[in-house]
Amino acid sequence: MPISRRKLFGAGLFAAVIGLVVVACGGSSATPTPVPTLAPTPAPTATVLTGEEAEAQYLGRVEEIAAPRRQAASEIQRALTEGPQLRSETLARIRDTGFDVGHEEQLRAAEALTPPGTLRGDHDLYVAWLRQSGIPLSRELTARANDEDVGGVVVALVDYRVPFFRLLATVSPAFCRALGAPGLVSVCDRGDDVPFGDYGERFRALAVELGAESQRTNVLFPALRPEEGLTLVAAVQPALVQGLESILESARKLDPPDELRQDHDRFIQAVDDLLGSARDVSQAAEAQDFEKLLAGVRRANLYAASLERSISPVARPLVAFLFPPGSAERAAQTVAEAGYLDSLDKAVSEINAANEAVGRALSQVYPTRDALLEAIRVSRLLGANQRLRETLGQLEPPERFREDHARLALFLEDFSRERDVAAALADEDLLQVSVDRKDFLLGYGRAAQGSTIPFCNAVAFGDASSICKSEVPGGEYGSQLREIFNTYLTVEFGPRVSSFPLGLSEDEVFEGLLLINPEIEEVLAEAGDKVRALQSPESYQADHAVIVRFMEEILGVAQAITRAARDRDGEAQRAQFMESGVVFCRAVRSLSDEIRPILGPHLAPSPACSSF
Image 1 (cartoon, rainbow, N blue to C red):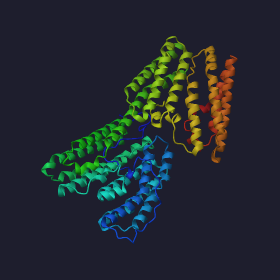
Image 2 (cartoon, one colour):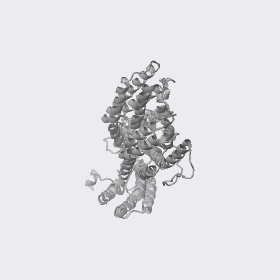
Image 3 (spheres, one colour):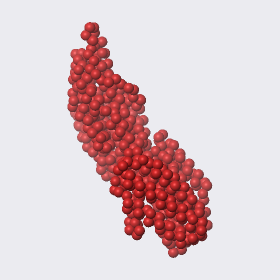
Image 4 (cartoon, rainbow, N blue to C red):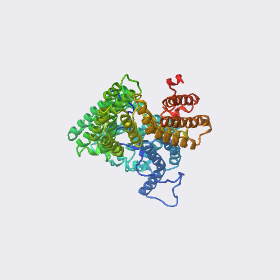
């Protein structure tokens, strides 16, 4: 099944293809605490330390040196996973971490240390990792953030995680704890001794590779656009598939002792299953088939959870580090969020299509009033509304969408209880039908816009960017101007003008205008005040003046329409409706291309302007 109508990854969160270790770059979910500035500190020379004291002092220094990296990594992880937030906010938080500088400082400080002989091997591996992976990949990550490339940031982060996991799994547990985050990186808690001799060593090495490869699966975050998410999955999956193929081939060559035969076979089966799901996910990403992709993810998490449950206590010391506490629950939560938003998007698609059909019916001239009423009836808007309410009642929203879900469900129930649209249609009361539609779109739009970004993207009618918060240039000015247009021109203004049927009699038109147009005047007046209050950068001043003039002129047209309705002057009223098109098109022609990314769908060039 192809991807649904607008937003594939509304939540932006996508569950790991393998619900195993999440290194999080050595980060932690705890609030970061200030850390001291790094500076080489020579060890005291007046005191002769015992071996244990020398190790403790050295490891304490390593932990101090690694602290800025851990803090920066934690902030990057939060910037990518917290939200929803705008891309600019995500990238700014990443740039502010100083991730690349922190790794360079680590190297200088580490090179100034003299490790005790027992930790010389760990020290050399650490320094080599900084030179070969830590520094270049942290620079790459920062460069991609500077380029406003969230997808590139994620790729660099994935590339960083894999060698970092291997480093943690290779050094001693004590050194691992000094480098990583003990609360998250369970690989550090594996113990010093590996049981079962040569087989145990080789099997554990394969488990380490499985943990390293699993780092490639945590790649989709709220800051990614849908097309970026699909591209990213398609890009990283080949390396994951190749890695799993290598692990599977090596595992089949091992000869386990009798007491581990069943565990060994379970491991092989799990990797084989994971490989199959990784291939399915890769194909689904390339085909942009979200339903198949989600199914592959769900299967992978089931395989990983099954492996965790089936490993016997005898073999658990070899693989326990693959299953940190809560990993299965976190994976299930992200799958649930993605599935919930996809189900919600599909449910909204029906009512969105029905609403568009009603909008087309109201904007056309029909030979008879009955023909217009029949066009509204066949749109099946009432049935779609009922089915959306039923779907919301059946869906169990994930925690972070619970409030959004409840707000939309409450509006739909209240509107259905308070308005009898079917009765208005049966009574052929077009004016009441138009008022009901106006109020429905107003309430629905407000509920959508007041929700989190992924929820809004999933439920918004039409172009979600015209309602939901989205990324625009122009800094604070651009963001504020877009929010004003989204709120006042789409959520508040649009339903009031698009619900007015051409099939009304002149008396009904006057009645409807006197009912609706004073609201339109209030909306436009408030929007104009907010636009005038903005401080536009110099590069946008000419466009800003055009927008201010447009807001003033379109308000004047609205006021003139109200006066014409009050005077029951149909000719003047129709002339002002034509004037509104002139005002709109004059503004559209006067705006520069530089302002259009900020305005998005608002005041966009229109073929209709060829008539004005």
